[in-house]
Length: 313
Image 1 (cartoon, rainbow, N blue to C red):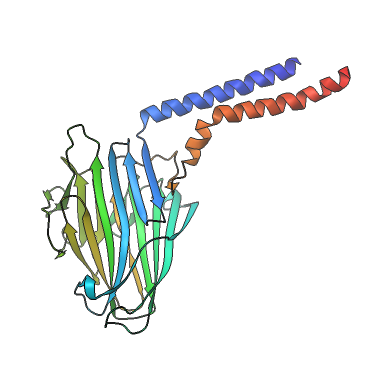
Image 2 (cartoon, rainbow, N blue to C red; image 1 turned 180 degrees about the vertical axis):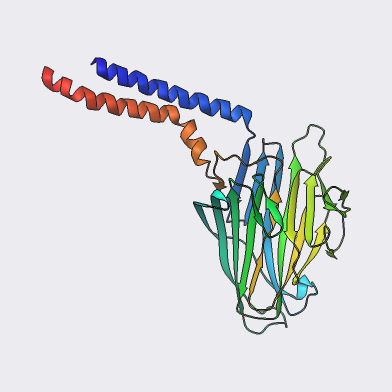
């Protein structure tokens, strides 16, 4: 019986230690929440429940020209996508998590541009890694999310327009609104953008790197991408919601692009991204450490008490 009591006390001490580590860790690190919503094709990021960034993929257009005329173009809404999450390791990124959202669309000829339906496969691969690494000319740190946009069609020499909505918000007592900035000349010089009434053609950033910043008094989140030979951009901005249009020239049936999102805080290595509202695996285990400990203790007591009961009987 003494042996049973010793084991029980040891397990209680272990459970208390796990809870203490969880509390101290949550106090010293920012509460970063990343949710991938495949139903609405949305990525949302929350920092300490006060800073929020939303990226929503809304529509995909097919056209025979690079001119944007949404009322005369064939399109499909991006929603109800498939989703998959995978954790792995390699020498470049170390331990990493990949979240994939994908769907195949059949864009029918609603306008005079196309007679037959066009099949379009859209795949979005999001990567969260523990190591700093390079992708092309970009140095990807622990406070960045890289994702790959892969678009495949059964046509060639068409133009594909990908529409993305972005929004940033802060919880401030004075009710201040967020602002959108573009990088002017260098990454150290940000210029606040003015609202527009129409969709405007615009090249963001400098050289081959496009940059958009989101914040209130300064740039808090950054959205970046590399301009290729077959990539152009349009935008509209009503003072709150920012809409970015990527124009891809589909020369061979496959389009690949790597945008990047920079967060104001590093992504903790002790958490795993949330997929469609499912909580962090590590946080779940820590939050339920006491319940798990009690269950283990009861199991041990029952197993070790069985021989004693047999002897008394």
